[in-house]
Length: 109
Image 1 (cartoon, rainbow, N blue to C red):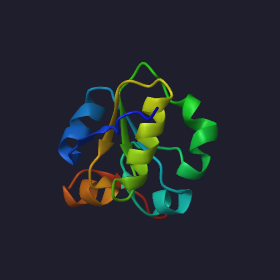
Image 2: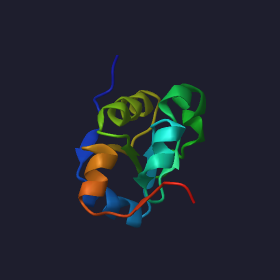
Image 3: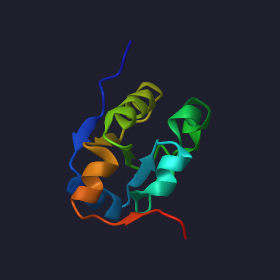
């Protein structure tokens, strides 16, 4: 049995959810995250996701993000298959987030 993929949200909708208490979860690899990431995103790389997904709270909305939206959709579906309920995918990923002019971090400190 496969869970339905998570619902897609726009970058603006995702940011609003985060402002209202959702956790933004970036599933890219550390080097990608270091280069640029949505401000406030928690890094849980897809390569470690199966081992670490239980670190994510089940009692909080989760907004999944990657570079363009494909890996985060897979990670979100995995969470839904493992008992998580409030999971959405940020359509267009970090590229869309930055393009929308939303706050980003990254680069060398």
